[in-house]
Image (cartoon, rainbow, N blue to C red):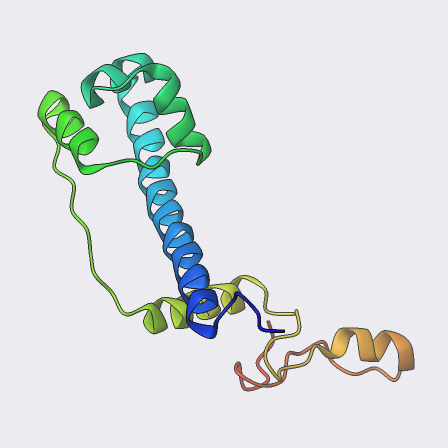
Length: 142
């Protein structure tokens, strides 16, 4: 008995889902910026929807991630509010490195890729180990 699914059909299905995921992530990033923009300027969402050329309910769906923002909407917003949108094209690997570095900086005592927190060890063994993070910070007091 042969399967109706081929390796190529499965690969295409996964690729389509990844593309949709990436599109949703981009749209949400833009909508977060737009929400900050309207809060800073005291613009109502209804006014923003009008500038974008869409109904307010559609804009709500964009902000909730159910719909994607498009270039035509951004052009309308740009024209009405005299703002310019700019985008950077960056290597995704560099983003991952920056995210890891930022997370490591915020959480110096947590377990990080092969860097261990000795606070929990000293609590269990109570032999007076100094509370230091060994590894990336070269043992400096955190």
